[in-house]
Structure formats: C-alpha cells, structure tokens
Amino acid sequence: MKKITLCYQDDRVLDQEILKELDEIGGEPGVLVKSLVEVFQMTADETIGRARKGAQSGNKLDFSESVHKLKGSSGSIGALALFNCCKEVDKLIKGDLVETEEFDSLTDCIQSEYKRACASLESYLHRPTKS
Image (cartoon, rainbow, N blue to C red):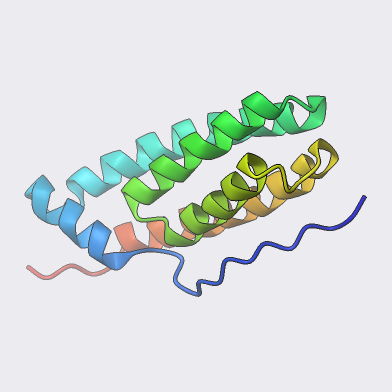
C-alpha cells in the first residue's frame, strides 16, 4: 500500500475572520462560538468514527459522505486546515484517485487535523477578550 501525501498547504489552523463574524452574530463574545464548538466537536467525533468504520470496511460511500460532512462543518466553524484536508480527500475520492485500502491512512490525516483544530478552538475560546 502506497502512502498518500495530501497537497493542501495551510499553516493557519483557524480562519479568525469566520470566528470573529460568529462572535459578532452571537452578541456576547464567545457565547455562540462556544456553543458551536461544542456541537462541532460532538458531531465531528461521530463523523470521524463513521469515516474510520467506512475506511476499515472499504465502504467508499460511508467514507466519502463522512469526509464531505466534516468538510462542511469544519468550514462553517472556521477550522481552515481541517476543511482543506477534507477538501483534498474529497477530491481524491470523487476523482477515483485513491484506493479503498488507503482510506484508513487518510482518516489518520483527518484525525490529526481535527485534533489541531480542537486545540486551536479551545485556545480561541480562552483568549483574553476586550471589555
């Protein structure tokens, strides 16, 4: 089995502009974002679990749907690197450029970006705010 190298390049884990916009919509700084982050983490854990099961069973549809769902939710919350990772994986799947045997290693890449996103989102939530 060959090792897949993803082509996305982004040092920014989060899109600060999206998070700022969410803060502005939510009124009191951090309240809406905190709620959205909690929902994102809960659903992303389930979605990555489903992707992992799809990968391990060779179920391309489950894997693909899970990656696509995670791409949308990560984009909405401003998890830029995770979004770009999922976008790249989604493109590989839809273009039949990857074998089902490689889905598990792609899930590992997604999981790694997810962990970075969660850590950065937590830091964002605990940042000093202007009064």
